[in-house]
Image 1 (tube, rainbow, N blue to C red):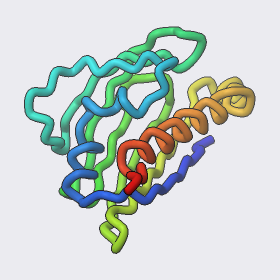
Image 2: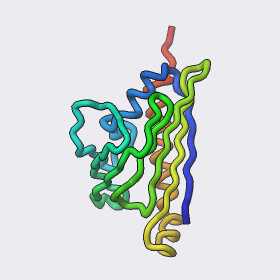
Image 3: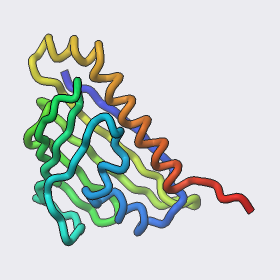
Amino acid sequence: MIHRIYREQQLNCDIKTAWDFFSSANNLSEITPKDMNFIVLTKMDDDEIYEGMIIDYFVSPVLGIKMKWKTEITQVDFQKSFTDFQKKGPYKLWNHHHEFIINEKGVLMKDSVDYELPLGFLGEIAHKIFVKKKLEHVFGYRYKVLEELFNKKTKS
């Protein structure tokens, strides 16, 4: 069964700042909970994202078990959207679309993730017991970190 996560967040910054931050795989570990031990393995001197780009990671999504995760950037519309697709990892399907919409407050960022677990019925049980909660935790953590990075109010 394919599941979907959808989140949006207003960022008080310009499109260049938002795009540069989110399109850089080097920033992913900063917005991922520490208990997931997320490590970007691919060395990127030039952080420019492009269609066909392959990025390798280590991640520990469950019980501290270290897994390899490989994604491919399958779609890029400069400063508007990009999509990363899991080629190898813990999911049967992981397709993550990032969208950036300029507005009067800065940039509205939208995340849509379509995902499916392996193992059929057993995967669905795992989804109900802990995977859905884990993903909510990951995206909740991301929201808090992004609020600190982009929307922190300064005292005058």
